[in-house]
Length: 404
Picture 1 (cartoon, rainbow, N blue to C red):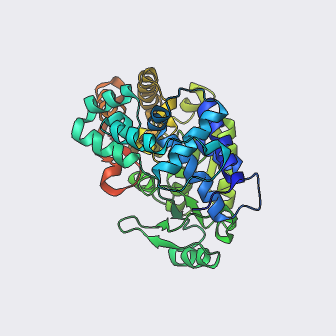
Picture 2: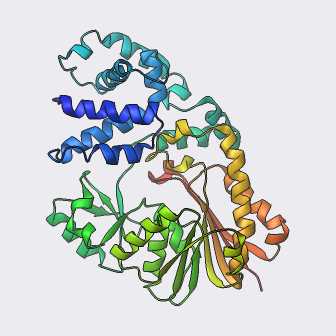
């Protein structure tokens, strides 16, 4: 591989923002890739892959380099040199790499790989929690799967096109895709490219959404004409999917506590042609009481640890702290208690997380059903989707019926 200095400098800048300033990796990459319009698909892919690889393996790389955060620029260069050596590329003859101890890097990597927390590059506390809740065998399989590069998966927007039409349209822009068996309407992108510059994106033909994430909206079993409430809609990934499943017939109320997320949802809905979505800001319990027993379907895509989506958010390993889990558990249960009142008798509710931890999933279901608020509910189905089984993100979903 031939290295270009301007691309490596872009990686240095991104790593400084992610590691030292604790900025979100996806936002940093998005911003850095906009800095030079001359960069082609391979240039952009190099920057994204290099940065994500180093962040994903941050603990191992810091250990090999013998450094601690925050990092000086020279130390970030050292991480780049480790990435080059461990990927078996030839080091450029640049002054920053003159004294790179190639043999010592490889030797230290070999020795450190005997330790699971270094090999998979995770914090000690997270490893302990995972082993306690999932057991050693399942935890180790799942962490290894989540430490791989995420695939780019698209969801066909059936409000605008059919699968065959999207495949053809993308191919005209040089983007090759293939269908994923057992995931209707999901396409995997064969080679990374700037999808946002394609005609298909402009026309609203697709959304970028992990394959397992695409199973959440159908789990709600929506029908045309339903009133559906997406309680934690965020920027609207699942709201848009629900609108497509409803074929724009009925009412879909997308709610969130953050106005900027709902504004982004409006833009996405317009592009996608999802005209039955109404956004509402949650401004307290009054917002919920107004909708008491008014919905045929309710989705609670709850805030969570995000341990199931570490493939695409590897920096989350270093942002999440053990005390956050206790706060999340309280929030998740409170959402179930508060938002379940919006469901009509006879209606269905889905509680979902992108976590694999039972304390955020099955335990929350048990707690809710034992509570006064959950007495009239029955859990009719629940699933945990593991990354090591199909290569996609980890998710949990539970379906409830509000009994009459």
